[in-house]
Amino acid sequence: MPQLVEGQPISDFRSDTVTRPDAAMRAAMAGAVVGDDVFGDDPTVQELERDAAGMFGKPAGLFVPTGTMANLIAVSVHARPGEEVFLESLSHTYNNEVGGIARFAGVITRTFTGDRGAIDPEEVARYARPGDLHQPRTAALVVENTHNFWGGRVIPLEHMERLWEVAQAHDVRLHIDGARIWNAVAASGVLPAAWGALCDTVYFCLSKGLGAPIGSVLLGPEAFIAEARKVRKVLGGGMRQVGVLAAAGLVALHEGPGRLHEDHDHAQALARGIAEIPGAVVDPESCDTNILFVRTEAGAASYGPIADGLRAAGVWAIPLGELGIRFVTHRDVDGEDVERALVALRELIPTHGRGA
Image (cartoon, rainbow, N blue to C red; front, side, top):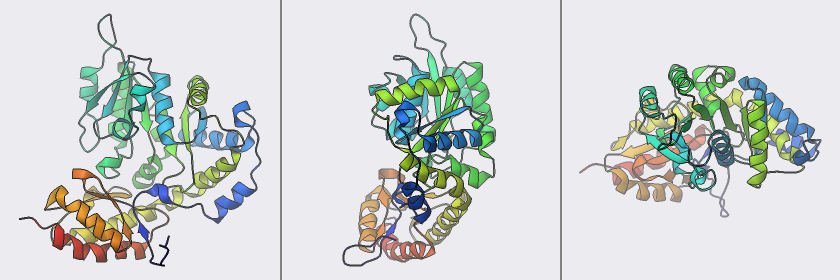
């Protein structure tokens, strides 16, 4: 775990992006065989793209620096400027990617309030438009799985099947924002290829639960990936000897998924412990994977003071307005970190979070 200058241990629950590459990743990076990926001859990148695509049953893949870029590329390829994209109202693409799909892809958006992040397929069918002289065509539907702001919720496979059927019926491309799709795999036991079969395109982050220092992989048909490669270049995402990073991604891809259940167990232990604290509003049953939003009877006014108190105790978590204080478990936190958080919260929530 990281430490402050004065030596106080830090339990960092801000995100699963804060993980540090392990010894195997660093060794792989040091020994990576590289080429120039813009010219298409970096063998380590090609191996990563090929392996990722095979796991999800997709013909091709593209290594990109970030998940935000992956989503922007997907929307840019699926939709022409002025066309429409459907998103869930609390989705990352809509809320936390700085309006990129409007600024750079030039699309308009329609948002839906989902059932814990799951968009109603009947609403998609109701509002999907073929486009005419007066109306834009509905070009794409973006589904976030797992869903960050709904506490790492797994959108069930059966629900994805219904969305996929509706999207196909209305000629709408379905893209899965699968930043944490491997957490859905771990929690559900459903293999990656089954999720991949229910979408046109999908991406996942190597730099979240899987532990790589950087990178995401966008997957889809060969023609889509060929166009995506051009859009990546336009966005400044063409990288050269990037096999150095892809090597860490390969370690993350092949070794990371098998330990994600540990993160889920730590999140559950945290949720159960907090649920016992007077003034806390936490439902352990809704904690599907590695993300937990802690709320209190006092509501949003208490989250800043509690987060400040946590930080003073060496526990880092992020207050996110009315959503609560977000805790994310990952490979660099363990049972000791969970207990440190619980010790602090047992003091802070009764002090700041009790209702009137």
